[in-house]
Image (cartoon, rainbow over the protein chains, first blue to last red):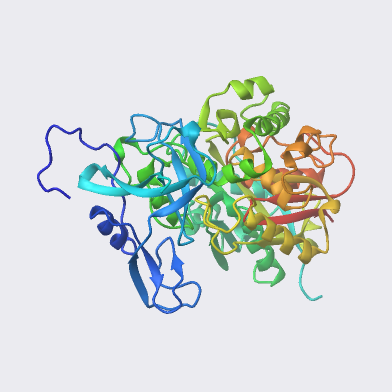
Amino acid sequence: MDSSPDSSAPKPTRIAPIPTLDTQFFWDAADRSSFVGQQCGDCRAFRFPPAPMCPSCNSLNTQIVELSGRGRVISWIKPIHPPAFGFKEPPTVAVIELDEGTRFVSNIVGIAFEDVRLNLPVEVCFDATMGKHQVPVFRPRSAS
Amino acid sequence: MSLRQAAIAGIGATEFSKASGRTELQLAAECSLAACADAGVDPKDIDGMITFTIDNSDEISLARCLGVRDLAYTSRIPGGGAAAAATLYHAMALIDAKVCDNVLIWRAMNERSQYRFGQAPQGGNMAGYTAGHGTGSLLWCLPFGAMTPGTWAGLAARPYMEKYGVSNLDFGRMAVQQRKYAATNPNAWFYGKPITLEDHQNSRWIVEPVLRLLDCCQESDGGVAILVTSLERARDLKQPPVRILGATQSIPRNVEVIANFYHDDLTVMPEAEGTAKRLYRQTGLGPQDIRAAMLYDAFSPHVLMQIEAFGFCGRGEAKDFIAAGEIAIDGRLPVNTHGGLAGEAYIHGMNTMAEGVRQIRRTAVNQVSGDGHVLVSSGMAGAILARA
């Protein structure tokens, strides 16, 4: 991220992620605009949320890998009340099923809530938060 | 069979309010004492205590209030209200195994006046959000504006709505029936206040397009306690015994407490299906043996999905089951005859289990007709209650 913030840009109001010891790697990568996940170093299964052990083969051999950042929308809502803290307008909150098979809760941006459809193809991009961090959000995938 | 049979001998509660005016420990002590008095058991004889992991009162403090002589066993259940019925499961096991004779289950909270589960964090203060009690994945929702139980439940319910063409209007019919029950229940917060389908559809959106205000349970202050003992002992006590024919829990792979969108098929509630399967196998019973059901209703969709999971109708058919009047008092399966957590109070599912006990005792204000067993389910756990 740029270390000299543009004083003319509005300050982000989205709350920063809350890392835990098991999830710090993910948020560190997001700050570098990288969308990563855990893959078992032995059986190659992807898993989410992050965990120290592979649920398929119980291996502790964990690799952090760059994910495709591509997926589809399998659930989506608009929180109205109480208003989502940090959002000027109600966000579109969605469950994304990633191409790797894991799921990720995020926002859908660049499309009206009413226009989102089940299985809408999406791709990752990043949005700034308070505290100079970033979170992965998703936008409709271009046809190409 | 050498196992003892467990039975519910007493139930007790405080009043249900929005501001109890006393501490949670006092609420816990009052409802516990009431359950003992109901049963005719000396509270000093309690030898087992069970509550939720997130209950703020500790066992020793409560035991000292009650004058408990010698506590032989304590345990707590994770999963919040979704696992409420697991308290009966633990109690049954303790009685069956002859580990305890008088097991007290309690849950008491000032969930309206002291803190509120339904509020978004104030001023960006995230201090209340922690990874634990099976809710670790909530941290993955917060930066995206999914900050309340309603948002998490909404995300979990939408695939079901999409697949079966269920709309918020369908939830409304459920909500109207629950409030009809609450309207005739003097202990309900919404006593004397039924709603119409129009009221439901005019209530504001909480989470579009899933939940309106009248699809959400209340936030309440209060406490509920249940005293479990052996059937043999219960026969000598004050109330007609309510047998726990079976009780069980099911937490299938990738199911979470409320950030529940990681399991394979989001159009079903696998924890309730697992609970149903295990409970029916344990008891040799089936949906045809159940006369009424007390189902955890944090939000309307949970009721529909549990009706389906327990086999009272096919998948996707709960909306038609409800529209046909089957959950009304003269229907096939009266549901939440106290008014549910939406109509009576939100005591984390404990008050719903107490209503199951009243139905078996035949002392419910909205008493179902005929014989049959009562199912109590909180999704991740359930029990079947019966007359002795």
